[in-house]
Length: 450
Image: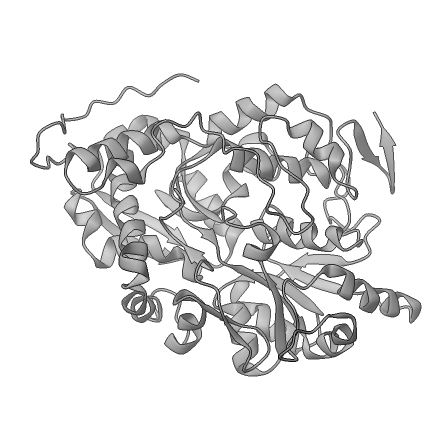
């Protein structure tokens, strides 16, 4: 991968020096979710201005509109689903080379089912000494419900926010871990419902609770505050968080076009610096700033939900059934655990899930996964920004993984216990019991070997 030529002002002195940014007036898009917080905080706490940037933040109607507007240049960048830059770059959906120099957060999603489904699941869920359901709740409990629906000739429907969203892959992962096939994509059929036990479809995040209440779907996977909103409205029960599906999973990224990064290298560095500082602020002093963040996010120009609903997850707790509030201190992570570093292995995991469910139709070599990840996830930009913050005295060297090769060590903390090694994507795909194997493809309504 060709390195960018960075015409930066030296930041080696103890006094912070501002980059000579090529473009100082910027417009960024976001969806009304609590994990857009780094953008709101970078603006409200003056971190963008510290870098000589004057930023407007604009909510978008849905993820497709958001991506399209970044590609056309109507937006300079945006809060994106981790899969969006990857899918655009490989040409699944809109084709464009989109990159990310910054991972916005870890965790932050949940899976919610309707009250009716919850009552049907409960007899199949173990309880603790306190009489409350034991967590994590396995999808095998939901399989009993889906089987009953099937026997009665009724489809079981669930919502997720976008075909290449983390929510789609997390929901599919959880369902498959419990013996349910969430369906395949093919070159000719992009519904994602081929051979499906559970029919997944797209619903924009803020519309999830109303769609559930209307009975159009039986459950959904979404980010906050829309799981907690179901609890507050008394219309549904969150059954599992993505932290329980894949501990400390990457969630959103900040996406820009490669053209933007090449044309405005100093501006890209300045943006990344400001966002790193926002992530630090959100997690510092054991989340001491989270209540202030909640008040900011509750404003109509950002998430626009009740502060009480946002606080339910942003301040280290999560409510499942009404009254069953549990400590989940890492439900939202914005900086610790190197949360903001764009790991190649995170990109590879999303690519394996695209392949597993047929969005990537044909077999790819391990080298392809590595090359694709490195063309989209850009830790070189991130670490340059981090170096400058350390030199400016605004961050500590120990807060950044300067010695990494961009791959996490093999990870095992998935709900099914199957290990993932980002350097061996095909072996990982072949180890998953439900889903396409590395040499399989979907033809018509059948899985065939290539």
